[in-house]
Image 1: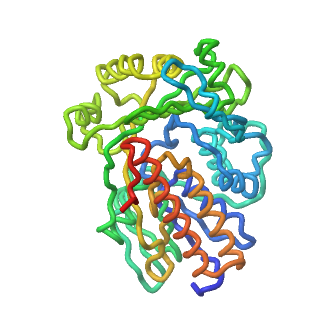
Image 2 (image 1 turned 120 degrees about the vertical axis):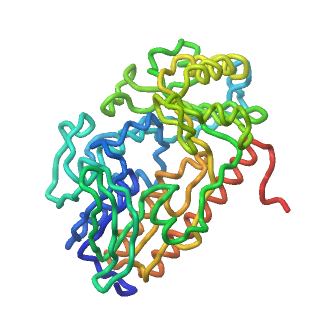
Length: 408
């Protein structure tokens, strides 16, 4: 492919979550779109609802307006952010009338699947289809190798129920997350590093909250911070993406420190399946004893409104916080690209992981339509990754350990 836009004829995208779907839709929206195939590792036809809220930043909103065009509102508007003290009172000096838009992973995923390959769901019910071509979406695919050949890049994978498969494409896009297999094959020295704390996450129905809790949570971005602990929460769409008050969910994220390899850390990440989970302890995977202990801890250390939200949560999950970034986004002369979390895994304090996926896809659209060169695409994507990843480290170190990591 030349420095300026040469749209590939065939693209394989490794990873069928938000970043992969965004890049697929960008390519399918071109005047002469390539043939797009998505390989997703999960064996089930749908990725499970991550039960997670997403702050819909400018990049995400721009991508959905330009490419998804859902024809409906996809986010809850929160016109204010504020902090609580330990007693649960709003700290007046922290009130900031800054409007933000809160949505859910589930909402974004289902709307993207609908546009990219026609998947029907309650989220897309009644929305208008268009005549853009669709991608092929294959589940149960674990990549095992890739190599450059005369036709492009040859990718090899194992597919559940089908054995070893291979195909050649003009371009491979690695959207397979912060533990990217493609990145490991191309840059094995780049790996995820646990940074000493985790995010507990969960949701409860807004109607389960008391009037006192609703007063500080509903259409507010609410925080509480003390030594080694930060918790935040906001309202997100409910089932099938409903924005109707009373049917929405309250989403919370609670950062807690666990020293690497400590007994508490090991106990936390040992799932009820008897396996030690390295990064994510999924919904339904937590031992009852661990969750009961955390709910008791919430009552001891959190403002009562946050403690109540934790008590009302039935399906918590845990994500270990890690740092990872590749110094390169482009391999094999631009035929293999790392995008989104595969390029740089942000700490969630940035609220920018989905934004990075959207930014990278929007920038690819500029490149493929000839607005910018390949070199400019690489430069923009890398600059965004480096800037936001560094900012996330600063935020996390200050939040959890009271230190600024880049002071001398």
